[in-house]
Length: 316
Image 1: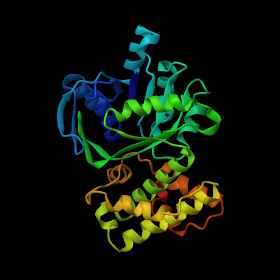
Image 2 (image 1 turned 30 degrees about the horizontal axis):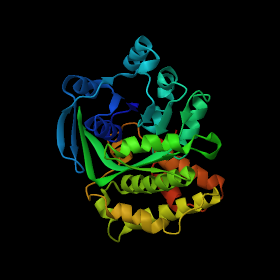
Image 3 (image 1 turned 180 degrees about the vertical axis):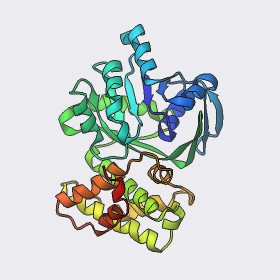
């Protein structure tokens, strides 16, 4: 199968590198100096799961460049699977790429940190291609142009079809087997709405706490105001999930605290980094969208309200 990784930061870069080192047919879309470095020198991966692997040859393109290549080569150049690993605020900008390079059988797997992305993207594409829902558990970031750092022993991709999509389980499992052979842990979800909400609740609480206190995750790993806020946000997301009719697991708090406690102490989220650097961030999807949903559903959200007040100048 042909793979396209759309967005080659820490998450997408790790996906592309793992696939390439397993001799899968994978290309990536990147930008700027990062793109130029990959095209010239290949991609370097420093992975706790693998090792340092330098100069991994991966065909890399700009968005326009990839569309041009596909238009020249025709249907045979179109990918079977597209991994969407861009930031939430870039979703609209990738629609022309997906419309141009997909074929009717292409599966699109978004792994953004916002609940409902698959359905949203499907609507943007007017149903011309099948967009699943997905999420990923990984600590990874772009350390330098052409250089991806993957930390820790967790690299777990979860994806699945929404019930109304009727995509054969065998088709989804075929992709999973391919990805597993590249060293990626994969779960084909039997309830992707539940699983993507659980990830959204975790990353929202993690990012909002880190940004609110401007601290690394080590400060959430022991009792104090940081851990207290994190737990308060987790409780509120649990209540929101229940109001949505999602069957929330009884060990929701334990699960999320375990994820935090297994983070490297110096870990910070991309949203936190972007806010500190005065860059565009995913705060709309990871903070304000959760808070707005809570209010709409009549859930008491004092902790989310407190964080919203802190960052209200960033509300669009």
